[in-house]
Image (cartoon, rainbow, N blue to C red; front, side, top):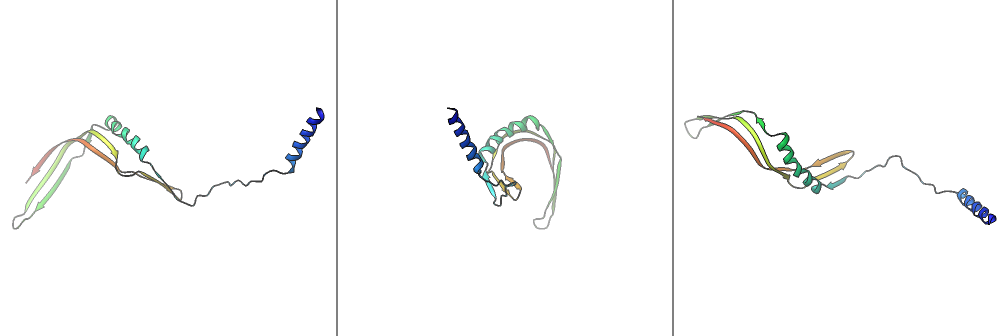
Length: 132
């Protein structure tokens, strides 16, 4: 029995010393081709959470006052006017969603993400004045 164990051990040592597999391991993998991925499913999940987050953290938000002048001359008389939007408050966002495809592109160590967002309903109140 001991002889069988010694023969098996000698055979294993002989096979181990014959030579191993030589493999080359690259330190850095070079990627020369651009990669793209569709992110629609992930962005849909994120967009569901964006609307409620904006309602709790960004609303109400004061809007800046806007005053715009205009001028119109149909024939002989020139009409001047001014539109003033003041005391604006942004108070609700009803829904935020994805618009179009959401794509991620990786090329030459540059990552680009293209996402279109669609805000469907906004709640805004403003005082408006028109002067002629």
